[in-house]
Each structure stands twice: as C-alpha cells, then as structure tokens.
Length: 373
Ligand code: ATP
Figure 1: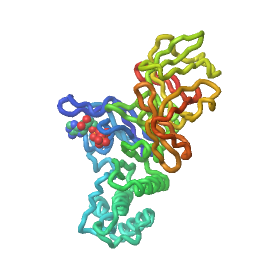
Figure 2: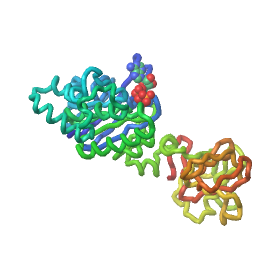
Figure 3: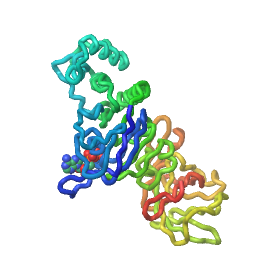
Figure 4: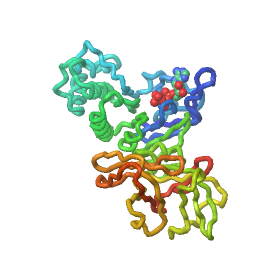
C-alpha cells in the first residue's frame, strides 16, 4: 500500500480567478485513514480529484508511493475512487457489476475473477445479493456494491468523495462503521472527503480541516477537538458549535478580566479562578475571542449553586434531545448553547445562571489563532 504526499499543491480555475486549493501540503501514511473535512467549496473534492488524476494541479507535486504522479493518467495511478453517486450498471447483476472493472483491466481468468468477486462479497456481507440487479437493492446495498467494485481491484489507495451523503442518517452511521472496519481489515491507505464533522471525527485516524482552499489543521480527532489551531477549526469541529464572544482584556482591582465588548453581559476574571495565567500571552487592551464548548457550560437555576464567579442570563429556548437537553441563551449579542441534563427544562424567559471552569476556556487572538486551549 502507498503513502500519498502532496507538496505545495495548488489548483486555480478560470485563469486564476478561482483558487480552489492554495499551497496544500499533506502526507498520508501507509495504511492510514485520513479524512479531509471542511465546508462546501473549501476545495476538498478538487484535492481528491487531483490525487485521482481527474484534475491537473496548477502548482506543486503529488506522489503515490515513490512515484510522482502529476503526469500519470488516472488509470495508471492504481487507486480506486468511491463517489456518492454509485452509478452501478443497471443491466448487470451485482456479480457482474463488481467484476466488470477487473475484466476490462486485467487478464485474470474468469475463475480467478469469480473467486475475487466472491471474496469481496463475503467481506461486504452481500453474498446473497450477487445475482440481483441494482434496482432491486436498497441504497445501502448499492453503496456496498460500489465499494465492492473499488475493493476488488486491490488498489494502492481508496479515495472516497462523500460516499454516504445519499443515505439516510441511520444507514449512514452503519456504513461509516462498515467502511472503517473494511479499511482497517484491508489496510488500504484511504482519503475520505466529507463536510460532516461528525463523520470526520468518528472515521479518521487523522483529520485534515480545510477552509478557503487552505489546510487549517491536521491531527488526530481528539487533538483537533481539544486543541483547535484557530477559531475556524474550533467552530467547525464539534456539534453544537463552540460558543464564542468577543472580549477585551482589562485590569480591574489588580485582576486580569476578560470583558465582553458588545455589552456588560459577560466578564470572566482569569485571576479569580485560582489557576495560573503566567504563560497567557494576553496584555491589557488586547481584543480576543473567548470560546466555551456547550458541554462545558455549567448552568443552574439558582445563583447560590455557584461558589465562584457566574453570570445571569435568560433562557431563549430548550431543545430536548432525549439523552440531554440543549438550552439556548444570550450572551451579549450572541446566542450560546449549553448541553444540560434531561431533567433541566426551564421555561423560555426564565432567569438562569451560568459559569464554566477555567480549563474549559478557549482564547483566540484578533487573527483567530488559538492562544489558549
Ligand atoms: P463541496 O463539498 O460543495 O463539493 P468542496 O469543498 O469539495 O465543496 P470543491 O468542489 O473542491 O469544494 O470546490 C472548491 C472551489 O473551486 C469552489 O469555489 C468551486 O466553485 C470551485 N471549482 C471547483 N471545480 C471547478 C471548475 N471545474 N471550474 C471552476 N470552478 C471550480
């Protein structure tokens, strides 16, 4: 299996007026499952298409294994791509659909092809579907057949372009697990494109977060979640999104306090928490963005429940999720979310009180770079 490397790769369209991918460098290790994630239009598919050979980079080098592949045709790259539109051949049964590529591209005997098709069908648990036509299969079964077509070729790498986006939520979750299992079992280097951060978090050995054609951060899911490199990553990874408010660092009574700039609804006394702030690269007068994840917000009906600093707000709305509730409330001009226990369901307009531990605080500088996580 192959390592895949992108070295300062760029792609511009329309004579340079659209920069889809901007100076992207990435290394995908042998047998690794890397997820490329980011919002619509950030350049994920273009990146994948360049690796597949379906688009030519306007700059930089792409290598698969030890070979620079910039000038190789897609079929010479020994990779298999799985798309969301699985495009099975309607007049062929599952057996023929899976074996078709092999018949075209190899000189394997019919018996060998048959054996490989059977092996792949058993890996995907679709052995009993081999004689059926695509139209009699469910969406999930069709996606398995599409996967089978990729696997049977025994490629150096798999490239997945949002393969599950046509499936309903439940099936999508099942197929995520399935794809991860198969990838691990086969040990094939894989790159998986999605705009769904949850899919990225659950599937990737590492995730690469893109925005505006550039790589924002690459790392293991927990690392990216707990230590986002910047405010974009912090907001994109995690659901509901991280709460934020713009603040200014001020000195008050000898203490360093983060004070919201939009209203007096929020102050956070860094020195009152008992934690050291010695290394914090913030000076009085600095504008920062304060971030707190919804699960780290501590929300109580009674102010007396807090020993230290806390803030008072009113409930906008409560959204019951069964396992827990999402409670929305205003902080300055922003709406914040707290994940609270299912029993806690105050009416809209009720006064509530919130705080959060110092260790849950994220601070971003004016450029959006993380200064503390
Ligand atoms: P999505 O999830 O919506 O597919 P993406 O992150 O995969 O988005 P790309 O499809 O790679 O993004 O597109 C990146 C940018 O390049 C977008 O602004 C898109 O409009 C532009 N783009 C992509 N392909 C072309 C093309 N063939 N001609 C012109 N512009 C293109």
